[in-house]
Image 1 (cartoon, rainbow over the protein chains, first blue to last red):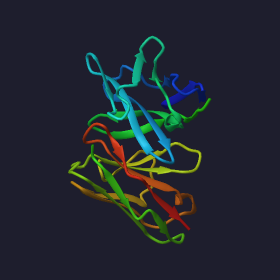
Image 2 (cartoon, chains in turn red, orange):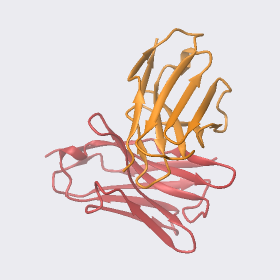
Image 3 (cartoon, rainbow over the protein chains, first blue to last red):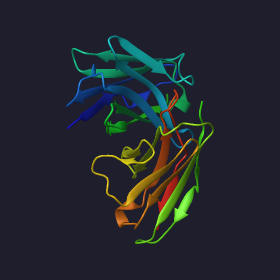
Length: 124
Length: 106
């Protein structure tokens, strides 16, 4: 059974950096049949895919254009986790942030496991 | 970026009835389409992938159809636990995108 456990600060000041970590159990961050994703949800922007990391003989990391100048996703094989860093935050970045696994195989597809979600509020 | 449009925004139905939810993509996504259910305070739950394949553990009353730009999620006989918000999501092109959701209410 795959489990994703999120941790990180729920309150960030404007212009600072939002940082969250997602610990993986039951799978590997270096799995060749998965990607590891950050998604956020707010009343104004709905569900928004922020970025993903996946390993296929080397690491590939993709970012959504809406945040590509401010975001970094870092996979860590030694800790079996991946992290999100979003800098220069504004109140518009206030949202519930989720980590999630997308399975990519012949037998299955879709984003099938999600973290519990972290409400991040950007406020001074 | 592919824009996903869902209709209706709110669907009022009674338990035991059939519900039909629609999703349209701004360009073809082939069959790279998923449906998710979300209840208050919870993460989205994968129901359907590949436009028509039920995910593990999803009851047979949930079915998906369509390809290209037009998709449908059908719930054949609504149970009380099915009242939630439903989202479609394309994974044909990066960035992946969601629709704005359909709220299924009693």
